[in-house]
Length: 119
Image (cartoon, rainbow, N blue to C red; front, side, top):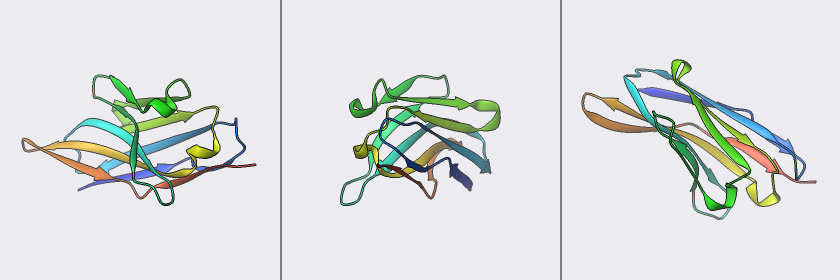
């Protein structure tokens, strides 16, 4: 099993910034992709950003130019720098990691961290 622990969420005024972190631990073999999803009240969970082991990134159109995903392979940690936050960014943010275990890819999720952009 792989455990993911998110941190860095909170309350920020619109236009402000937050940095989320997610550290993976446990039976880690090779973590391939890592990413962030979010779920706002009454809405489906959606992909925010993802990053491959080699550093290729993918972003939702709604966050392009404002959010930056990065990872530290040595620490098995992924980050999400969020700038110019908008009220519509308010959601619970979940970290994900894909672990290659015995030739099989298994996906793991964190418990989530609340991000609120409000005045």
